[in-house]
Image (cartoon, rainbow, N blue to C red; front, side, top):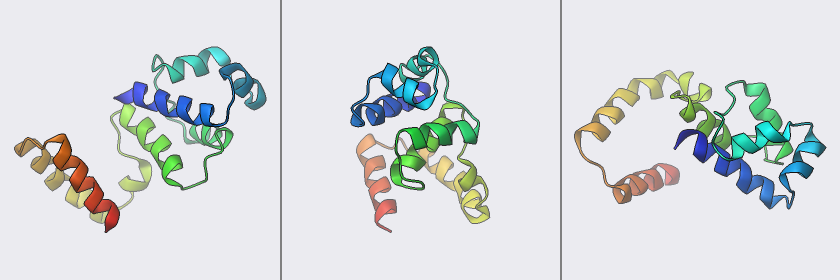
Length: 123
């Protein structure tokens, strides 16, 4: 997953703007070589929030939307980290070990995991 998933997301949103990679980079002041490597998953996502925010704004993602959060979440996951907003939630952090033990202890099928995610979204 990691860098590849992050890159696919960048590419998806850039293409939704109907921009070539070079056009997009030129308009937003990004280095086309580095941006191309990001899109292809050859370069790890940036860890700096300000740079991630520049990408999100350039991709016309609405602040705090699902797309915005997914970009930041995939960047954190690519570095083996939890997103910063989740790290500040003490109650959630207290429950994560149980979630991790549950996921490890029972081989959760992709369908069951999708079902759990959908239940969480609806609540």
